[in-house]
Image (cartoon, rainbow, N blue to C red; front, side, top):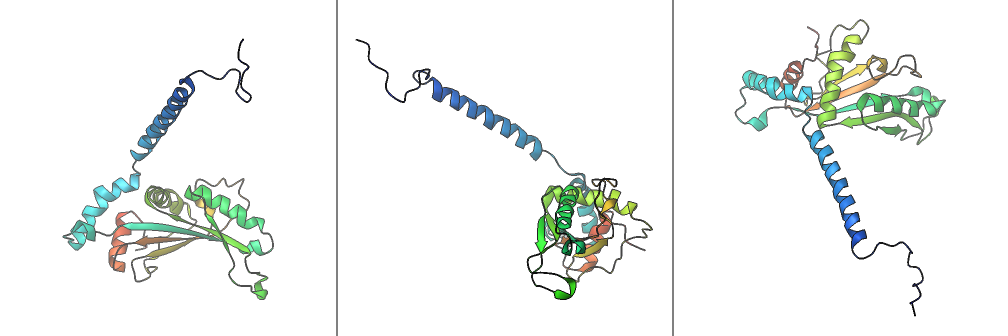
Length: 223
């Protein structure tokens, strides 16, 4: 007599080791595709990063005579901060600003919230008041490229950056009145025009070194 099929066993279950082999093959194809994608991304070098290696580093050595390559200053990170005062009346404004900042930075920002309640400004503790994001490595260089070559030249009545905006520790801060100067923002679809702060943090020990570093990156300082 033929044996009755066991309960719970699928009727069309593959026999022997065919199923594990197919699963391993599928996993292997997925890993191979992921490996190729990561290899193509790892081979990419931002234009400003190449500029740092080919122009900025030799220029800094020529100017300050560094003997150790590790002494040569570099840009460590760029912090973007967008404050939205209108969010006290409409909390959706902060979300809209965060969405625009994500387009500009190419990275998801963090929504900033009020630490204290201030009744004069109708501000409650924990209320969203803006957004910020920190850029490093490739995204940092790409943002710097767009800032210097596209955004700043589009600023109305732009006469150069203020060379006195260094903090004494080699970091530089600049303000942009309208975030619409960035090419990622569609002027017609933008909900509002917000200002933003850009803080360029460097490893330079003095402001003089930091200024020369940014000059070699083509930052247009006022003469």
